[in-house]
Amino acid sequence: MSDLAAHLDGPCDNAALLVSLEALHDYADWHFTFEERLLERAKYPWQIDHVAEHRAIIDQINTLRDKLATGNVDMKRLIPVISHWIVDHVNNEDMRAVKYIEDVQTGTTQVKHRPKEGSLLL
Ligand SMILES: [Fe+2]
Image: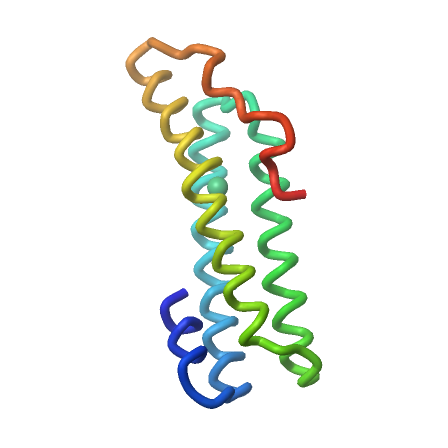
């Protein structure tokens, strides 16, 4: 993500942006796969919604990558949007899942960790 943000200060180099976007895609895909294994192992009750949000983020990255490849996008406008989207997911949905998994491990699981309605990025 910091590689992408670095492009915002200077002139827009689409080739370099494309490399950074590919790196973000690969990292996100690897990270989400790892995280989804943890959710499955913990029998996380809201796993379907959480995984759907992962897929939506990957789809958004792919859309940006495709638009960038055709030169049909203003990346300086869109990179902050996707950055915010990923940070929001980590700060909200991932932290909620981490708390649930911790509670499972300590035997204190409660329904209070259920995501709020409309909090998912679909
Ligand atoms: Fe996640």
